[in-house]
Amino acid sequence: YRTLYILPVEAGHPQRFGDGLEEVRKRGLHDRYQLITIAPEFTAPPWFADHDTDPGKRDESFLLKDVIPLIDRGYPTKQGPQSRLLLGFSKSGWGAISLILRHPHLFHRVAAWDPGVRIDTGPMSRTDRQERIQSIFGNSKTFERYRLSNLIRWNADQLGNEARIFYYHCQGNRAAGGARLHQQMIGMGLPHHYLFEPERRHRWDSGWIPKAVRFLAEGTP
Image (tube, rainbow, N blue to C red; front, side, top):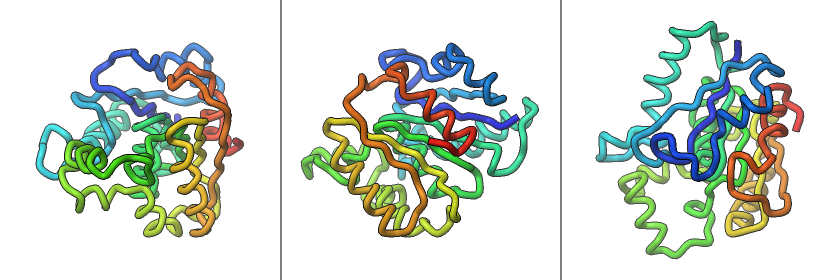
């Protein structure tokens, strides 16, 4: 079976934003599209990057070196990049896009709803951005390796001619930055689907997941 990794927004298993795995299960999307669905947990709020100095914040390495090999050993998964799909929103939407741009050979498609892009494209004060960078990445040099606008510029040609990224933005403080990334993808010739829609609740269960999983499974937005 293909695998769908539902990337968490929070540490542990709180449900302040709902439960992505439960939302997929409740709607029967795993059965409809014949997917094994996985929701890994992290000990700190994950941005799916490796912190420069803190060994307790190695989100990317944990997913790639521990979670995925564990699933592939223990379950009847299809092997190869076309078998792995990523779903996320807010900071895990950022993580999904960064993972496919950094590792296009490991993942086939990603869907990211209202991803947290302010740290990249604003609006955010310089002080707030620097504090966020230090907390998540350790230093600016590490941040630049994960920065979406850099990854689009560096790796756009690695994703081929198929649209492998589908992301949405809603009205709100992430919308302007999301539109700028959309325009950058167009300028770089990176095939993708982009949707700007009216504001929804910033939750897993606000109704966006069925369309996202359909794109992941079928390539149809």
